[in-house]
Amino acid sequence: MENKNITTNLYLRQLNESNYLGYDSKFIASSFDTNFDILGKAFQGTGKTYAKLTMAIQNNTCSSENCKYEKDQIKLLNNAPSAAVEFLGEVFSMLAVTADDNFDPNNDFKYTVANSIITEKPGFSKDFGYDIILNILENNSMELIFTGPMFEEPLVLNSSAISTLSEQGTSIVAETPNISELMMKLLPQAGLFEADQLIDGELGATATISEEFIMKNPDGSYDYEIIDIGNGKGRNLLKFDMNKITQKMMPFINAEVAGILSQEQGAVALWNVYLAKGTSVEEDDQMVQNANAAKESWDYSKDLPLDEKKKLEFEGAFINYFFNNYLKQFITNQFPIVEEDAAVFDLSEGRRAKAQKFLKDNKLS
View 1 (spheres, rainbow, N blue to C red):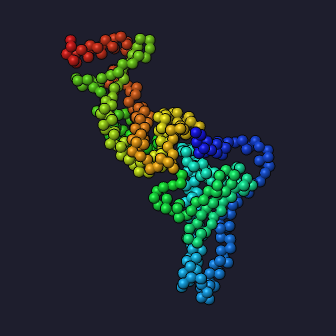
View 2: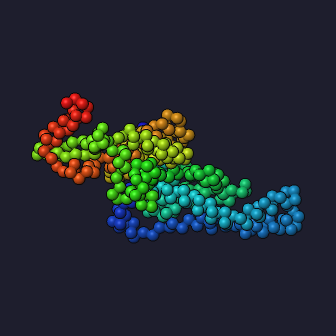
View 3: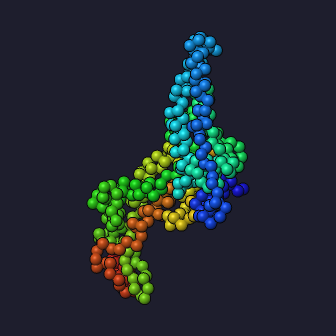
């Protein structure tokens, strides 16, 4: 089944980033009304309401005991302008995530439409049938309503609900964590590198894994992998103790995964954008859109909270992504530390020498 959120979000991203309108003669000859006057419309007529409430209190003609209702409404109107600005700022900040480069298109496409209206994207003005309305409610909350052709029904956001979500660290739009920052933070933490390899807590450009994780022979010499470089020549490459590296890394990886899973909507975004298909960094960078999970995507409304099976799937995919994309560069094609061992040699002689050394080390000759 086609995922409408993915297809619509990707369509909107392509539409909003396209230059096609620069070549549309009708568009460049037209003017568009993007002044939704959200606050002006919201407070239109409140002056009369304020005066009416004040007169009722002064003349003791209130409709409630001790004028409680009237006093509450005056307090609401007094606080409304600053509360409205705060509410709008909170909503607009949440919606802005839809424009992030690594935005998960499995999010509800209505929020991308709403952000397109707010940011005055071509085709989302009042002339095209879009509008934004802010209502001040008597229950001390506000509601922001988005309407227009791409909405199947009006998108209504209540200030009380948005405030509650914000206090819990939750958003109406899932922000995808920066996977590169997560991975690069893990590398220097796990003790695979000597302290002098770090600069301000980050790996230097020439950082190499500590010698304790390099494979050695019983006599203390390095145990090399011999590779064929063609023309009968070969060279040595370092071999790494992956069991030791894994044991060293896993406590740090487990802690990082636990931290991510404490904010599950971010974990779902990471899964959908990066982890589900086990793609490489290069493949992700080359994608027009980071939407590689496709049919394997997790659904925010159906899969949250994540069950134990999905948490384990996430952890496994996170570990694989880390080892294949970030640790791999430090353990692949690494030349010997001993200078003479790094020289190119005749392949048959190198293999013969390695075989003789194996026999000697194992007391077979």
